[in-house]
Image (tube, rainbow, N blue to C red):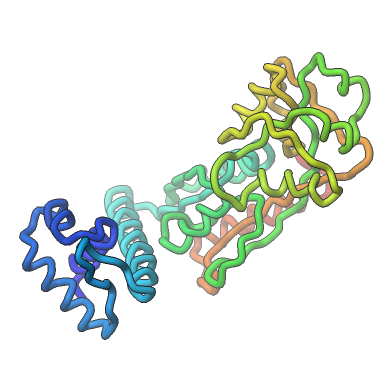
Amino acid sequence: MELRYLRNFIVVAEELNLTRAAERLFIAQPPLTRQIKQLEEELEVQLFIRKARGLELTQGGTYFLQQARTLLERLEASIEGTRQIAQLRKMVFAIGFVPSVFYGQLPLMVRRLRRNKNLELVLHELKTQEQVAALKSGKIDIGFGRVRIDDPDVEQEVLFNEPLIVALPASHPLTRQAPTMAELAEVPMVIFPAGAGPHFADVVQGLFHRRGLKLQVSQQVNDVQTALSLVASDMGFALVPEQVHKLNREGVEFMPVADEKLSISVIASRRRGETPSAAMRLVNTILAELVENRRSGRYP
């Protein structure tokens, strides 16, 4: 199967119109039509339903579109990694992360990895669900997030559980003593990140919903830094991982929750069943040490 057939199929599936797809690919329509037909014959599957106004993907076509995209993304990541290795004579290791995990010990891991002159680190800020897709495509080698994702191709390891604390405007009445969950539910809340879940915002909202408390969400933003800016602007409160208090944001008071011990996991995601590379073995060794430091209280 030729790779250009896959690329052309993706464009046709996105346009659902052979004329527009041919224009986008800068080729004539008849050869594109023949390519799609040959692809269907090779797969022994009908990929499109032909209609008067255009095309419609079959169920098989929809599945094949997802697989084709993943295959090409992985190929492109492999090509890019090969080029970097050839140019730099280094092993490329890519890490995905959600920003809130990098206020704790994980920057120590990155600093130690950067000391290895044979290793080229690449960092990608990605939500946990995006990390799973990036692992499957080969874009990253390991991801650090906060949400459980059920995927047969990815294994997840809970490194440790981190306490959640409350970020409140410095002048807010609830800063006089640690607020309860019920008291917080009476205050507008700033949550992050925005967009389709599952992600940290879903976990936080679930903590209140499971206790029968209804939240007043005033704003949903993309990252913790913006959330803290809105808290400082008296837009409401935010629940944040404990390490975030190291930011010492002006106008924000960090408080524990009075009646609950809330926590959120820090989760490492890796490709399932893959033999660890030398870089991954080094990462795993450093992680084991950092996690032990965290659990025993020996961390900055």
